Structure formats: structure tokens, C-alpha cells
Length: 265
Image 1: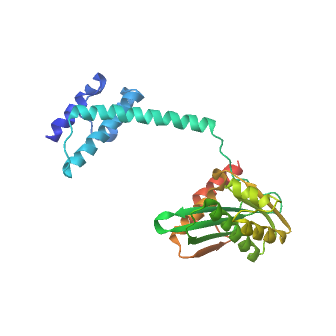
Image 2: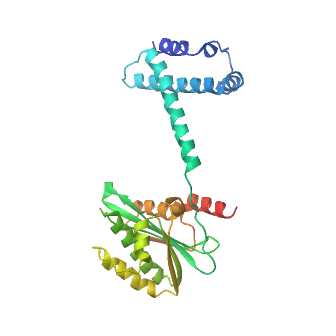
Image 3: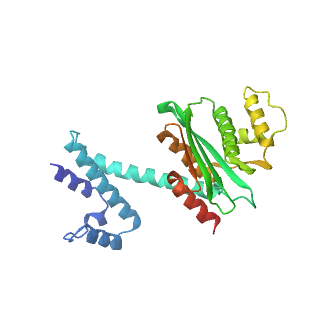
């Protein structure tokens, strides 16, 4: 029964697809012949039809209802239309969007990147911190898990407070703090007294910052904060806190490789 339905799906294809010669030794040979004979559009149709037939077979084997072959042919066309539409949107986004890359600090300053991740499912949040030198080498990194914060600004500013306490304990004296929350980064650099409910936390951060030999703050886009973000996401796997000294943390290897490759070009 299903074999007939599969043939009906192929019958609904364009003429050139119906008349392809059979008898190939294996799928690789078949695919090579299709690639040589068909246009990219026709090849896309065949590949989606293969997936539709395979998906429908699995559905029937697990108790599903066999759909009318004409409906399956229409679904192929719809899936291809959606695919092309999404590809067009991605192309526009790639062309127009600017991607900011992580850049190493200059001289003997250490760059500290921080990010926060929320885990609503376990009612917790994670903090990721990475300290790197002018060669992009990881000096120290931190992953910490704490209670879930409903306010994103509160979560970010508490993370910055914890970061500065952490780097003080690690004996760093010349720092550039980077994060992707513009509001928090601006508030830390502001010389005006913060009268919000989080003002006391900002004040504590300012007090800690005074103790550094040099200290500056920089807002960056999310794309330039990917290593800290990968650490923050990894926090869901730890019980409390995890520190790496002078080594690349396994959760960040992909992001670190991308960063080092781009700024070394």
C-alpha cells in the first residue's frame, strides 16, 4: 500500500524527474547521476520528496494515517517555498547586520568579559566570566550558579559585582570590564549617584573599582561576548561554582577558537 503511495508522489513530480533512469548500484551513484542531469531546483524537489516519503512511512509504521499523495506533493512545494523564504531573510540579515568581534586588550591590561544566563526550568541563573590577556590567552575563568532573577538588570549588575570581587581575589589590578547589557555598562561608568533600587549595588561596584590601578568599562554586542555567554550557559551543569586557572574551559573551546582565529587574521 505504501509503495503505491510513494509512486504516486513521484508521479506528481515534474516531467524530467519522472523519467530518470533506474538500475543504479547504490544511492551514491544515483545521487551523482541526478546532480549531473538536474538543475539545482529539480534536485531540491527530489531531496524534499525523499524526506516526505520517508517521514510518511515512519508515521504510518507508528500508527499514523497515510495522507493522500496529492497532499504530500503540495507539502513538498510548501516546504521548499518556506525554505527559500527563510534563506532570503538570512541573506538580508547577513548583509545588513554588523557582527562585532572580540578584540584583545592593549598592553598589560586584562579584559574581563561577563554574561548571565537564565534557567527558568530549574529556577536558577548562571554567571560566566573569562579573563584574557593581550594575546587572547585565558588567565582565569569562572562559572557560578545562583537563584533566578526576574529582573535582567539586577541579574547583570549582581554578576558584575561578583566578577569584580572575583578578580580582586585573583590579584588582577588593571582591568577592562566588558558586557553586553548596555544599561548596566552605562550605569557602572556614570559618575552620577544611582538612585534606583539597585543603587547600592552600583555604589559597591564603584568602591571596588577604586582599588584597581586602572579600570574601564566597555559595552559590546552579544557576538563579542560569546565566550562568557557559553560559560554562563554551562552554569546549569554545576552545583555552585567552578574555576579554571590558565586553561581553556571545555565549554568555551568552540567560541575561543572562533575568537582567536578571527583576531589573528
